[in-house]
Amino acid sequence: MKPQQGSDARLQPVDRVHTLQWALGVGAVVLAVPVVLLGLSSSFVVLYVLTGACVVIPLFLRNRWNFVVSSVTVGMALTAWGVLGVFIGMCLFWPSAGLLLLAAIGDPREYPRAARVAGVVGALVVAGGVALAGYFVWATLIAPAPATSPMY
Image 1: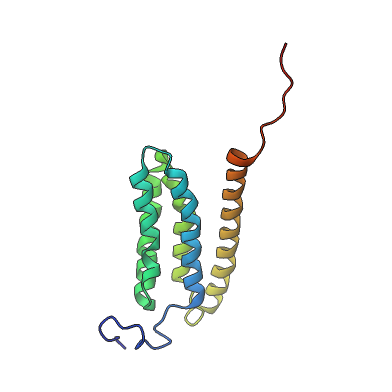
Image 2: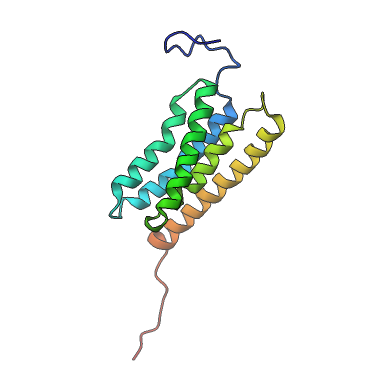
């Protein structure tokens, strides 16, 4: 069933994005934010910001088909962009790309087992990425300098 002009209220429950797919998309954005913040101190600020903005695109779409197509498109584009931009750090967007690809199969109404696996893997990737970003911030900005004895 095709919805009316731009109205999400008329979408049937089957046509809407499932909560698990939405959560995996949000996880992709959560993992992209520290990468963009890290890129703000580099010479390639515009590339980091534009790449981070591309990760958000699927979250604006409420129709399931549009969400899946945009998730796969952005996920594959981020993967290719990470390969091409590996020397400037664009490969740091690969976890977000993986989560967007997992979001495409994260609909338990269509793929029950695959959605369960996608949810578990996505949760582990987000937890690991947030922990790694937190450790990076601790090690570079917050941790006290090691005490060294003066050399006489």
